[in-house]
Amino acid sequence: MNLCVIKEAGPTCLQNTDDQTDVGWCYVDPANDPTASSVLVEKCPANERRILRFVDPHGNTPIHGGTVLIACLGADLSEEP
Image (cartoon, rainbow, N blue to C red):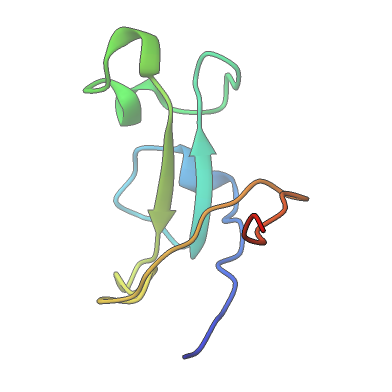
């Protein structure tokens, strides 16, 4: 098994654009970040208008068939005894 880190993408990830050059992920939350495009979350329920977005101009992030594990920084990922 191979593990890798998907890096946080640059600011264009927060925009609704076809000219995406960034590779990685971003957290889109227009209610708390005025630079984030509300168009990206307009299909979300009104009380859930935020998403974790992956971008890659080649469509390879995350890799097709891969599994993505999302955890909070500093979270304990060990199993309970």
